Image 1 (cartoon, helix red, strand yellow):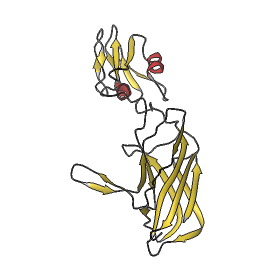
Image 2 (spheres, rainbow, N blue to C red):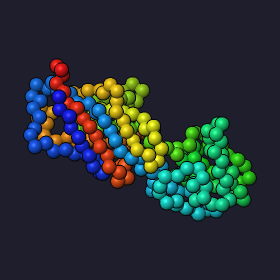
Image 3 (tube, one colour):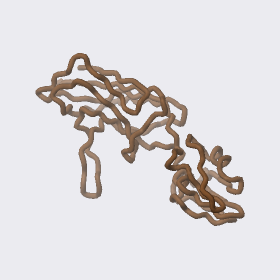
Image 4 (cartoon, helix red, strand yellow):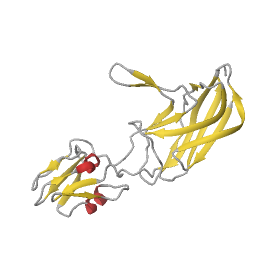
Amino acid sequence: MIVLHLSGTTPKLRLNLHNEIDNQNYNLKIALIGFYSMYLIPNVTKSSNTYFHKGERHNIPPGQYNASTLETTLPKEVLLNENHVTHRMEVTPFAENFNVGTVGKLLGFKNNSELKPEETHIGQFLPKFLSIETFNIHCNLARGMIIADGEYKHKETNIIATFKPLTEFLEPIAYEPQYPLFFPIQESHVRSIEISVSNELHEPISFGGAITSVILMIKNDDS
């Protein structure tokens, strides 16, 4: 059994080994046994920060928003209400049409939805104030999970763990699976290991400069 610790602030963590690990018989497997970071992932980025008001395009600064902080950033003629019964956002524009632009997803509307004035509009979807639903942990060595790729298709990945973060913005993330899943290592000689993280849409995640630590275990398939 070998336990490895990777740590850093970059989106990809890499560990170069002084002594390579022999896997010529392809009997080694790898698992994630610990993942630690800080939730600094913004829910508004440069690709999701626009809205249109009075015929003009506006951008809000990228960052992490909740209903109250977002309302202070939008025009004062736009009222937001977070309905805690239906768990939908209610948006009421006054005097002018309000186009939610790419901020729509955050509010639970389709992007670029045009909202008429003097009406309360209810979001079609749950608001997206928590930017990430699930974390996928990728390891370059692993023959990992098989995921759906269309109704009757699938594809192989190097994902060795998937979990839902039970945390809020600025809170620590700690994931220690009770029953780690071990996946075959597909390299005959292990000289380096690389870990990256993606979201539920398989888009890469950056943790905003937070220190991220990953603990891996390698064991013989016979053990």
